[in-house]
Length: 120
Ligand code: FES
Image (cartoon, rainbow, N blue to C red; front, side):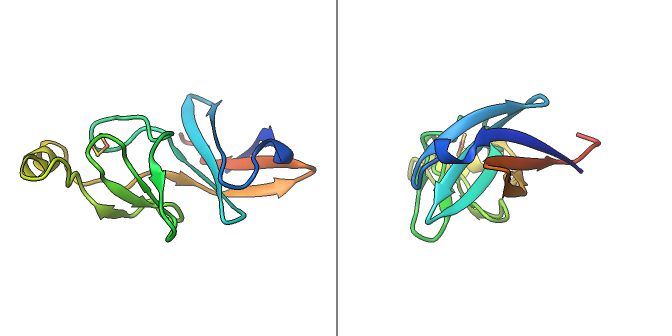
């Protein structure tokens, strides 16, 4: 795994988010309850940008388009395209359920670092 320095630590205050571009990946960095998370900025359902998605108290991000929900720690799917009501089930079937990709992070030398697998 390669560790890439992506942002000065003090440029991501609590409850803030930033999109960084690293080795061909658009990565959403966000700080939630003092924890830093890094995840693909592209929803695995139909590709909406997640940067404006709601982050809930239990560390879940909700896609603004069809409200799929993903665990910030693991990328696990908590809800798959439930919006809009009625049509959501059909939209959920359009794309196979798929976890959101998340990346390990660490803070070192005053910066945030993101781990990228070498094969990516
Ligand atoms: S694009 Fe994100 S839930 Fe459909």
